[in-house]
Length: 66
Image 1: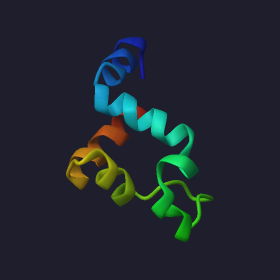
Image 2 (image 1 turned 135 degrees about the vertical axis):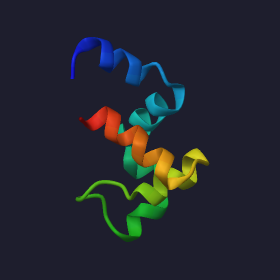
Image 3 (image 1 turned 120 degrees about the vertical axis):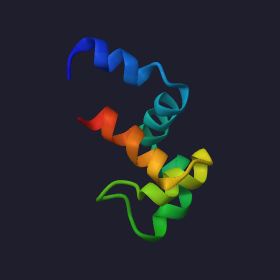
Image 4 (image 1 turned 180 degrees about the vertical axis):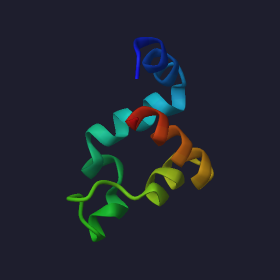
């Protein structure tokens, strides 16, 4: 991913907010505690917090993890 693509991905406020949430998942996704955090956070948890569809969240995550 080149710098322009990185800046494009981070220019989306929701995408940036998701990244900030993922920096501290225990505090930002308390419902995930039931399943643990060792494998990350379920897209469904992010979807619920962001108020977006699962497909939109998946698209946002695919752009920042490429």
